[in-house]
Image (cartoon, rainbow, N blue to C red; front, side, top):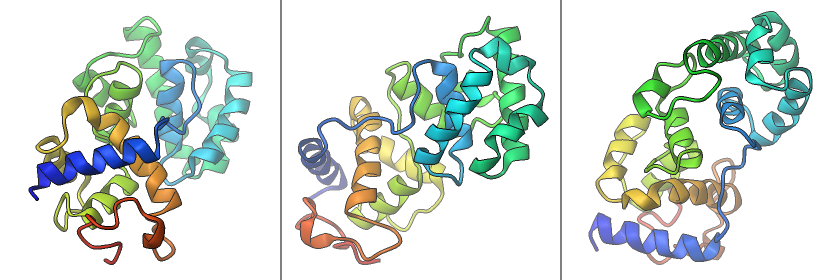
Length: 212
């Protein structure tokens, strides 16, 4: 089985196992996803979803958040860790969106990458979830699982993994595939415990059977 054939089979099985895969960060506007994905660095999505409720209660739109000082933002987002740098990036990002994009989130990958605190992972997430464009989000789950499954070989660098996956994952499948990897990585192909291979729908085709 080629890597491309393996990828298509994995996509098909994960679709059946997780039909409703979606982003686990709560948001109803594009700028809120930008904020949340910055806060999610080295923090759980569940905690981010709680913290942003307080943030948006005080700063309900782009203009309000752009007017806030980094110190005021940090006071609220500190529970997510790395509060100072995250608050600084969010403040600068919201000011750029207000001043250069009339309060809207830019719609191209290159423009997103120029925003403070936005890297390839965040830009891909926005492109896929907000704008419905082809995207591959190489978070820790994606990197761990694609190595275990044999879709990539010994790659840990997020950009290298992303580029390798673009070659074998159909563009229209990439975004949902990565969301399903998150769910599978949390429930079955875990990182901090031994993977639950006995209940994995990919057991018979997994490159490493969950053993690193």
